[in-house]
Image (cartoon, rainbow, N blue to C red; front, side, top):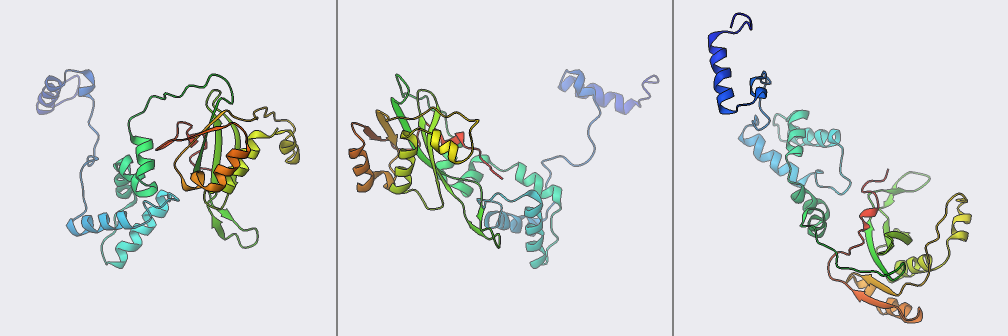
Length: 262
């Protein structure tokens, strides 16, 4: 005890901690301060924080920064004449949020199932490139603004065509309008035609995009845009393509697009 400069009570506490958890790390000094699970808000503050977090900007699709979330939370607390939580308190509450619940509130149940549900084993088999192509849409996490006043116009939709055999993107379409037969038609024309002229028009001469051609099979979801008469007419004019409607999310995973683009 003298060499370690420890008192008798401290020594017995260390012995007790080591017996409960016989590892040398049990003898390390404990961190000072409150534990992460300790709540310091009173009942009124706690109840109002739950109301604010569920009806405020926390679950907005734009995913506000932590600083913006804290500012909004403090503003609403001041309006109710309540003492607002500090930055660290709000940050800890966000860190303890259930990911599936947050995704459900922000992006819907389908997105929560895709991200947090059990991983399904794909049963799709493609014997060669362009044997099977999947098409799906996703709403991008980016705001388009006008050139003059920088006002938000909206979030664009990305429609992708992915070849299952090679996992390569063979075509895409970007539009501020929601999924429609027109966006799918533009996607198919981009996927089928050669990309040389498309790259040259955008001065992308150093890039090579050899993917293209007429697919033998196409898998799409049960969206109204893909079940429309116009889309079916395009498919009939495209030749012997087998179109299959797949319930639920597709195996392509439009997850190949980045979750955040800024």
